[in-house]
Amino acid sequence: MKSTVYRRGPDGSIVGIPESESRDRRPSGRTKSPSKLKVKKPPILTGSLPKRPSAKTPIPRKNRTARPLSGLGSKLRQSVHLLRAVVIGYLVFYVLLGAWFSSALTKTQATPQKPIADTRGTNWLLVGSDSRKGLTLKEQHQLHTGADEGAQRTDVIMVLHFGSGGSPTLLSLPRDSYVTIPSHVSLDGTNVAKKKNKINAAYSFGGAPLLVATVEANTGLHIDHYMEIGFVGVRDVTNAVKGVNICVPQKYNDKNSGLKVNKGCQVMNGKTALAYVRMRYADPTGDIGRIQRQQQFLAALVHKVATVKVMANPLRMVYVAKAGSDSVIVGSGDGLIDMARLGLAMRSLSGGKANVATVPLSNPDASSPVGSVVLWDKDKAASLFESLGAK
Image 1 (cartoon, helix red, strand yellow):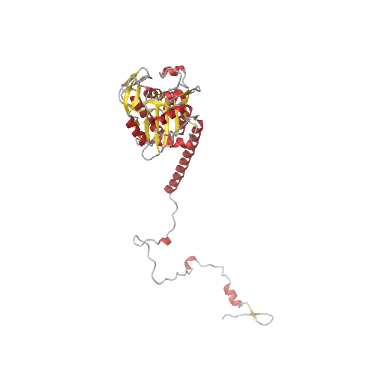
Image 2: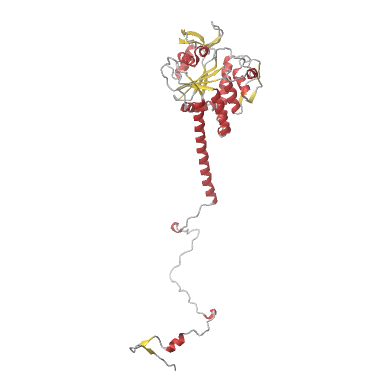
């Protein structure tokens, strides 16, 4: 029988626990092995257990966890950001290049002394002159241009009309058209009364302003903008785009222009392209055939400039802009916005969406006091001009 001893405090109350129990609670120095330890079993839950998700019982949306972006999604986002940066970079580049090109162009006063009233749409007068400016004597010999013969004349005269509804229209005026040149003050300051002459003589008599006035007086179309390019420009711009693709209808071997080409489609460099748009003596249709080749070349050039191979190559576009700025002359009031609108209209020409025409003729080889000339069909020409907004 165990004895129990209690401790009492000063007031007689029991303090602590019985000594016998204290001894029983002391560790015996021996520990139970893990196998003899009693492990409490978890309580058994009663009721229905949650069903395991299956194909027929999908995981509730609220219990789903968000999955991190896969590697493919991350790469897609990077590609989108890169594409956006490239597009913005190209836009900035073209805006800056266009601004530089517009500021680098040579400007000339092309507004006539008495311009006619405004007509609908926008009309650009596109002129190709026989200027040899920028060509050395050796280059003049190689290109078969000959030396300057004094007063400058215009071999190419075109009106590009757009912005009045419908497709743009490129209208060619034969250089030998027999028209009325308005009264004017000549380049030497002499007052000259109106008279009949070839339309390309207007430029030599009074420069760009008189040519614009002559076109307005004989077509009834108000000219809003002016652009001129010489022999050097045709050669250099063509070379800047690495040549243009031209389909030649027949073989030509012309000593006057230096053109030697075979029938079929081919890439022409600047020298050959210049000869192609100048040649007329080896063509039985004369100036009419030359006009068709000029229209063909212009469409081919614009098409080449608009290709991805050129447009997406910043260095190539700089070459094109440099070649153009060195040889193109525009009106004093023609700015960057005007040039951009011209470019958009020209793209329609390259895509075959523009109308291409020549003034209707009644006699392509008539005699006159100033030599062989081209006579317009007055009624058909008037109808054509009216369709473009002439008054």
